[in-house]
Image (cartoon, rainbow, N blue to C red; front, side, top):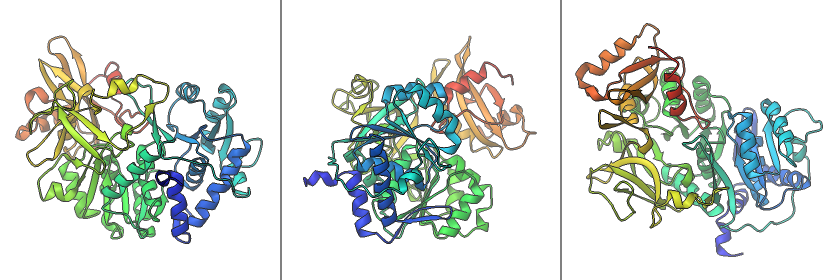
Length: 518
């Protein structure tokens, strides 16, 4: 075996099975699997995939929620050198057809609740074989059927440079990027996960709260499985259930979005025994100092977060931990570059050599060992997103302070130009979310004949009696927002649009502004 062949998903999970065979690997509801069970299930499912004609280099698509059956089926594909892709669970039929026509998978694995959509896809995509997770036996084979197969006895050679998976990114145009990551890329991503969690041991128990289409589903459960730890799945989000799972399973590490953590804070975390947590994480968006302090006081004493992107399989940017914020006062920072990655702030449109002085705002560019090898079906992608000297243009804008901490000020494409002044939507949102009456908020630019653009805020409020005038008054108090940064238009809504990976959908929010009145 060549030395670099150990840098594969297949080799990593086989190693965990050998060294941690009797330890718990996966838990979902009343189902618990040891590493020996996990390995055996993957090999049995691999036989089922082979019977359907899948071979190395083929694609298998998954339209599933997170759980033990999905995880076993996903990693069964990795044993065969198959390229796995988790589809966005909430996308439309038209969108899914367009994507599958591009990727041409040979197999689609789906949940019972997605049966109608899966059947439509089966009719639309020639040669697509369907496999069901759960459900009764019938014309469509099930993962349970595959579990009854003999174990796969072959040995498909897999190299570090082989493509392992496709990670879908939301894409600013609405068309997802299909980012191809090699086995080596995945291994570097998992190493970054170990770094973020201050090490991972077999004693850890990670509570997964993310759907498989999120890059964090690859990074974090994978990193824990590669180190003999246990992964507990939570299929449906409910803050009370989530706290019960932490308490009942003695969870040591847990990750949620700031919105979900605010839901935890609103449901009396003091009533649950969360003392097993050694570290927790907030992912996907910024968190206010107020909420982070409350989380460290009421949930877990140490929080961490990473700044990353799908192009780097989630964790090719920076990591920050709550002591950096609380002790060093680095509130709002995304930290410093993580393992096997680097970051620079450069002049707009420049190369990686055009670095800016500390405190000067510019374009954020990164390099990471976990960077994608290509965007499936888009041969010019790399030329568009890389500088001439090989740095990835993230599309984020920010600066590095005098202590080397990175701060993001917004997205290059989320800037609102009002009266000749550019304002980052994220900067305004970071202030508004501190209002105790606001549960969630999205800021966009609206057309304005005088100023070019005006600042428009869509807010979900906790009390129906709260008015736009109340919110504007709060913005004016204590100089919270300068006049040119205050929203000139408010829309109070029941919920905010999100894209297929659960992030703010600003394009959809802008469309809402055309049909809603204050």
